[in-house]
Length: 376
Ligand code: APR
Ligand code: ZN
Image (cartoon, rainbow, N blue to C red):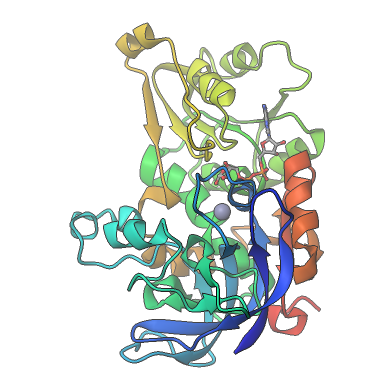
């Protein structure tokens, strides 16, 4: 079928909405009518070529929600009409990582996903001239419709408006997982969150739900610090004004926080996270650093029991966790609408990427189908 989708032809060119061909779902795949999609900084990294070479031409977009339109052979966990959040790591459940309880690191996904292919190593997307298009992050949801692996479509309650549910599949899984699965923050522990964009705000919300205190938000844009306070930050440090954000964080936390979350993706803020933790503390790097960039820390400080740890996509079982996160949003404990600062149509994708490049606003949600998204 012919659909409209945001195509990255080359990082030197803006992403444009084009007509592309989408093939029907094969065995173990699902066709989803996309209702709404969040625009994440990882989309900027993809569009700017920072994920490394060979990641185009592609339909990009990975933080979406919609309604199942049809299912391929063998798919029984969802049916046409079901509301789903998209999960960009549709774990195979049989590789050594999946069997070891690390489905977020699924090897099959990593192998085909790096080439922008679905789980059988092929694509359902092409340009009208026949050129194969990659499925950006296995999800390709800056589009009217998408075909995803069965594990990439997770059923959620229909009561949760899809314009909010869109955020579950990236920002919420990633942010909540960093706090719950990686740091395992306990009540009363101190937390700093560096970067209060769409993902960082979810880390703050998760820290609040975990009972962390204080929760110190750091950003260089005052508007983000306001949003951070609304999500539960108890203190705010403006990195553009403060001469030493690390000392300010240490002062606010009696010598350093238990956990610092870097949610930006820059070597200097990874270093700031390291400098902000107490002896025995842990710096968790959530941000995606451009391919080829290194980060350093003063290594003698490993002797004070400090840890620097990584995380990918919440480091748990994203698909299994999604319904519970949707329930948290439905109950009002997670305020998804509060982090959405802009809404637009699909054609607003490049403007949204530009806002992220400039550091303006938190999440933009593209209402691909305004009525289906439940926005009005
Ligand atoms: N110091 C403090 N804050 C900064 C700095 C800095 N040097 N540089 C950027 N920021 C802030 C921005 O102002 C913004 O609020 O970091 C925030 C980043 O948020 P977004 O651009 O909205 O990015 P987001 O979608 O939240 O993703 C954050 O997580 O998943 C990864 O790839 C993603 O690396 C990205 C990170
Ligand atoms: Zn994302």
